Image 1 (cartoon, rainbow, N blue to C red):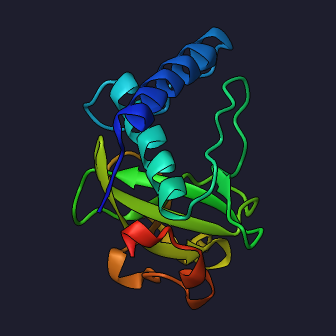
Image 2 (cartoon, rainbow, N blue to C red):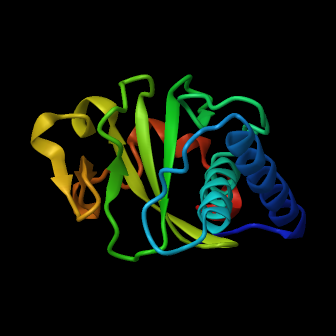
Image 3 (cartoon, rainbow, N blue to C red):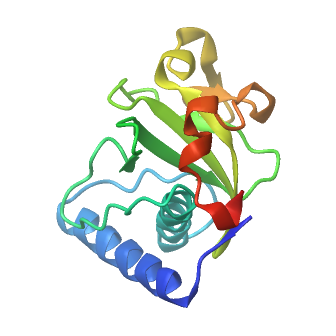
Length: 164
């Protein structure tokens, strides 16, 4: 389990609010799925990203004005797209227009401010036509949690010790 401390929670709230405002100001359409507010979706997303970065002892992307393909870069140089869900049995999902601009996808499960890493899948494995599924909101790439790598061997030495 990864719990964000008070400062990390404040940073998450600030980044979520500012990214939401920037996206709307640029006329970007809100493509969220589900009954939760877009602000809640943004907070869960950035909270999960910061939790992932905390777990791997790397600095989170705090940029507001642009949307990079990768949410973070591991010390191995691998680019990671962090996906979040509050559903304990949730799937790793990626939109159908996603490209292979990242090396790994990571699934983080939980609700702000406490999360857990469910696992990883490479872009090459996830972004396959056979993985296109429709859960009622249009097709997207999907993987079940039992298909994810819990922690690739080459990443074990990079974990933040309090979370091992």
